[in-house]
Length: 342
Image (tube, rainbow, N blue to C red):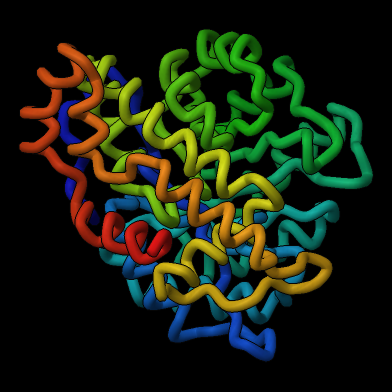
């Protein structure tokens, strides 16, 4: 496993680690699963400082991959980096029976935990959500993270439902993409659930109300800077954390100018990393979108040391400490970002 992030006394426990990227699924030019590319990308992301990877999540285009492809991908990534990072399997669907099948298969494949998105499209009532999440948590011995993203699923997990779900011993975390800091604060104040930011631009704000880490898309190109922000905030270096957050804003905006998978794959391709095309109904980034993304990444400050230097007196004081606990392989991510904007 990667070394623990230093200086984390101000942050709550993180059952899956603090810096997590929801990994894209690399495809070949003809749309098949790029198995060597998946292994290579997983290694790159862990080298860049990720303590865990989500496989087969939304960013992994899971609605378009078969159960067999999901199983292959989990096993390949597990073999590539399982000794150095936790592997979290996305198993959520809008069919409880199918979700249970995927959860069981993920456990057999060696996953360290499950990510379960709110059932989408069918818009179940809260009683249905409660029964669904409990059934998944009962189905395996793995720790489970609920993924609350009403913008995609069509229905939020209500605060009262989260309070009840927190009573289950294997429901340990929430990936929060509801963008409701007040509601998240209430759950954090009344449960032991670990909260992970699922909206990159709100990474620092959610940390400020008690989140323990992030599940990021922009982590594909900016994991060292995001991890450095988490480290700085956990160490009480708020000025440095704010400077890092501000430096990341153009990257956050750039990756999400259109659907996040599309531009995450474009950014990886620019950096010469495995990505490949997206699967329909998504479409690959246009030349104009790629040009705008290059400009966004060029405007971002992806080098943690450079961002720390902009943090004023508090940030400068944190730079020395930040240099001593620099994110692993920050040079790798910086080189990738440089290639992406060249």
